[in-house]
Length: 193
Image 1 (cartoon, rainbow, N blue to C red):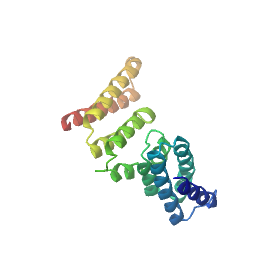
Image 2: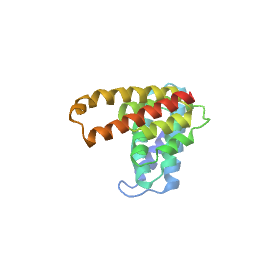
Image 3: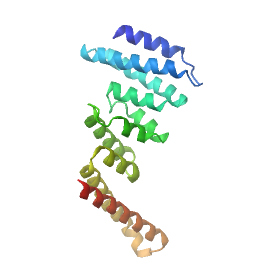
Image 4: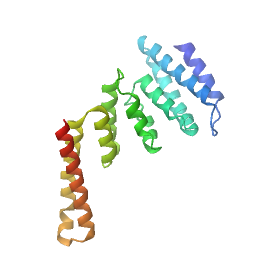
């Protein structure tokens, strides 16, 4: 593990700090990090694992600059520490490549861990993004979890607009339409589950 990590760090240090890096070099670093993490994990070397995670975070910035989103997914799924690596999920989300992550892990051994991490991520950081939550539920067959979240969100939205009911207006109508849409998505997910 240490030899792989040394090679990964030296290669990462050669990467340009602000420009796009060579995609082959980035792919090489990703594989080194994945295998170094594996070695450190089987030997229970917590310092080595922490070092891999720090280097992976820097590598993610380089991958983002280079537009290497599939390599980002490989780094995340290869290491498999989804909770500790939410920054990759956030980067994919912000760069509108979230679906790459959802498609990539279909049938993978780590699929159940990933789908739970994605659900936690969406609920915690983007609870109002119904479209991506729906994409996760469809992609991983998590209909019940998505439906429960959507139903809860619909009730929260109803509580929020109670003050608007007295004043009425176009804003209230738009809010009611959004609430209807939320409950419709919830009902559809319940029906599928």
